[in-house]
Every structure is written in C-alpha cells, then in structure tokens.
Image 1: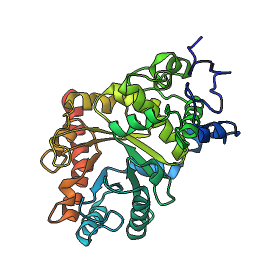
Image 2 (image 1 turned 90 degrees about the vertical axis):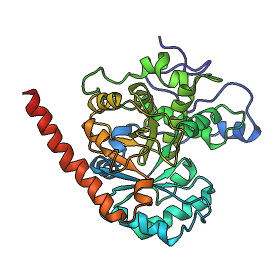
Image 3 (image 1 turned 180 degrees about the horizontal axis):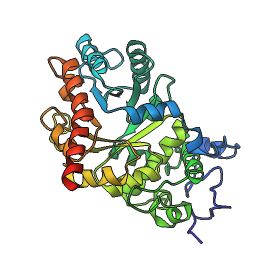
Length: 349
C-alpha cells in the first residue's frame, strides 16, 4: 500500500480525492474555501490537452526568450524590442517566452495581449514565472524556473495559500488521471502508486519537505492545476532526473541548460553535453530545448547532441539582423541536424 499523500489522506481506487490540503492551521479565507465543493479536474489530461498547442510546440525548432529591458515599461516595451521579436518570428521562431522580471501580473497580461495583437495567433506565447498572468486568454502557457517552481510549491503549504491550494489539488487530480508513457530506451514513467511511494507527488506533497526537488515538483503540479489541461507548462532542467521530476509535475516541455555562459545568467551551471545527448534519446517524445548562451557559435553543441530544437535569447534580441540570424539558426537546426544524423548513421553501418 503506498504511503498517504498527506497525513490522513489515502489514495482511493487509484485516484486522489478532489481536494488535498496541507497539515497545520488554515487561515480563515482558506478554511472557507476548503468547505466549498471544488471544481473537478478533467478526467484525462492527455485526451483533453489542446492538440493544436502541443502539435505546434512539437513542430517548433526555434524558441525565442524575449527579455524586456529593466528600464522599460514592461507592459509596452520600446520599438527596438518589438523589432527584434517580430523579426525573429518572421525568421522562424515559433514560440516566444515573454520575460519581464520586474513586471506586475497586470503588466504581464497587457504585454501578452499586445504581443498577441502584433505577432498574430500562430505564435506560441509563453509567460515567464507568473502563473496568474499565464492564465490570461492570450497566453499559451507558462515557463517556471527552478526557484520559482520551488517557491510556488512551498506556498501550497502556507497557512493561507490562497488559490494555490485549489490549483495544487487539481494538479494532483490531473496527475492521478494521466497515462504514463515509456521512455525511448527505459521503463515507463512511474505509475501513481510508485510516485506516491516516494518519487513524485508523495515527496512533493510532504509538508515541510526539505528537498528543493520535491518542492519544485509540487510547484509544477500547482501550476498545472492553475493552467488546466489546455495550456503549455515548461521548466528548467539539466539532467534526466530533473526531466523525470518535470514529467511528474505534468510539464509538457523542458529547457535544458545552460549550454554556455550568457549575459542573462552569467552564474548559471553549465549542462553536460553527453547528458543532453542521452536525454534527447531517452525522452524522444518530449520537446527538449537546449537553452542558455545558445548562439550561432554554440549551436554546434546542440547539433552534436543530435537535437533539432533550441531556445535563444540575447543572441537574437541583440542581433543587428534578427531575421537573418533566426533564419540561419532554424536552417542549421533542421537541415544540418538531419545531415549530421545521416552521417552518424552511415558511419555506424
């Protein structure tokens, strides 16, 4: 019998009950909300996840990370910023992560609405690190970095966690109803009982857990509950274990890095290129985007790992000709990667 998800809470019939609450006293607003019947989660995450968004994400080779300058109005960036974003999209970027670290949720909602108006309906718009903004109609999904996912997971266990309580419960419901898919050359993703036994949400949902990885996993489940099954959820990883945790948190794509030192994150830990290549094989059905310091010079590390996706930030945003650079990166990610794969296959024959 798997251990309880939370003290006094047993899984019933292979499913988790509709609302799971942390131990300890609850604030008055939270207690009142607990007394209300919660909205039921969708019965099958995979069946209901919007096929269009997921198929567009799988078809996306170039993902733009567009950081708004700190001195700019985050709800209305300057013309040169829009020029770089629009040119990158014309050059082949199929997804744009809107990164405005100093903005409020309202400002991010205005930014994504303006981006939708300027970029059109086909571009995937991902909000960085703001779950409430990612729930806006014009947003296609959310990216959570490690620290933000951990903070969101910890918030689930606060005395009065607010909406995070209900979102976490819905995320757990979605987890319970999700079919685990096998890795390309490994075992199937763990079933509910295994995860409740210690790999995934059991640890994530342990009140006061000291494990940052557990809190990050719970944060992803809170985010998935808040987004619902129809929006995209991505997170940052650098090895197979973190990818498995991301899948346990119902992420549908990941960033993998950093590939090189970048101006955005000069202190980022560099990822192992061999681990990247291994993860590309093991999680072949998962969109993995190498990220962090990717440019025309370092893209070779991505191609050497036999991957055909990349997330690019400052290299495009600061380029003299973002359209030309995006077009070059896209060509190399598609045609050059295929040519290298053919050469590897011929050498191994």
